[in-house]
Image (cartoon, rainbow, N blue to C red; front, side, top):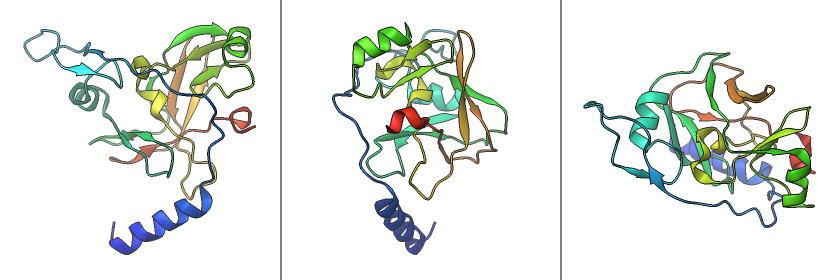
Length: 183
């Protein structure tokens, strides 16, 4: 991307990206040991504060990276690494605390449950902890020049982040948060 293209993208981001409606939605960051195994079939000794896997194993095994988002004021974003992700492929499982819609409402009240996803039956996953998994870092392209390229598919008990379009290497993975998030 040329300097002129970067300038234009930054300019468009500033125009289209309004402030996010977040109040008291601080994420809980804790670190843990990487759950992946090394080539010698021993548990990795690196510590991670973003996902269950360290950045090396996240990239090599899942083809994902977490780095600053291209969307202004969005924080970190989820990116593909060296390989493209074909349309329809599951990018990752959305993991976290299993709660009901009622428990989410009690926990957050009028505030937006920033990392919670619910299915129509009222079963929810709250990925407030940063080590809950990589899909929690997918941002929404709403009010930006970018387009969403994935969807959160809610099953009975499992929530997956699935590619709705082919995603090229080193491209940010974006998904719709739904209208309820933005109210």
